[in-house]
Image 1 (cartoon, one colour):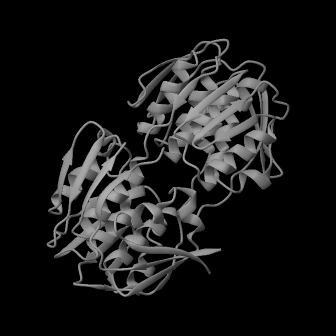
Image 2 (cartoon, rainbow, N blue to C red; image 1 turned 30 degrees about the vertical axis):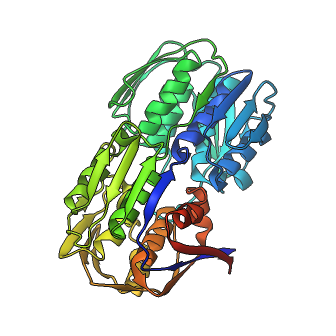
Length: 417
């Protein structure tokens, strides 16, 4: 197991290129199950979660070739309809195979994904939607068992705007007979990216990016060759890094239109943010202004940026209130920031952050993916060295982040624990 060591006090400057979005790549790679043939995906980030979904697809009978950041998936020989616990437990997003397996093979047996450090992520809405599409659903011995000779279109209202639920039901509905309407659908850019890929495969989808998505089922889909969209959360992380270190970072290969809320909040802190079609340049400031943040479903401020923004607010002038509305346990990084000298008080789903003049390096432990990033950011402005353990979380969602930061001037290295 590795740890990352950060020495604070460096001003970050330079250019960084953003990798493909993990949260777009996972459902898009899974969508290959819906067709018989070979799909090619470029700009795929080489991450732990990507390897996990590849292992699961291979278990189902897919043949996968990986070259640099291109993944080719051959799905002509699917011979399994079961996603076992040993593979699904590695990553909750594995539940995304449920809809495609059911639609393609008429039955699916998928392990329940289990717990999550940042809060409950129930799949009841996935199962409710598949049942409305005509599937017979049962749960036995820790597995979801679903069967349907032919899925049929239905109107489905999602009680909450679930991202993976929307994606799972979209993928099931594209091969259903008739029209499916998803109401209160999630609106994230990753859902639009999946819909774009499905349309290129021959699906008929309208309304993605809004709360009402309409899918007209087709009898079959065709293989595609597509590129994965840039990662908006990695982009936001480097934006905060520049603001935090009084830096000057140019972020290339990104999609600024996916980051409206983050850009707006960062400008309120006093940072200058210049935007072009695929580039964001952030100039930091020594006098960071405290601002309040409330996480919301897209297009609101993303929960996946909350921890990074809290690191910024920890050294801002004044006090800020950060409210987390998406996940109930997403303040577990606070205790680690406090070890570094941050002044943070939690009450329910709200954190009161009083900015301090300086943080100090300390041994800390990463508790989840975005917490890992926030501790690296805090370490960059702390006096002395910060040793961050359990960074395997980091490798689930950031590709070579320490190398990218080092190229911007950070004093950061990875060592075995």
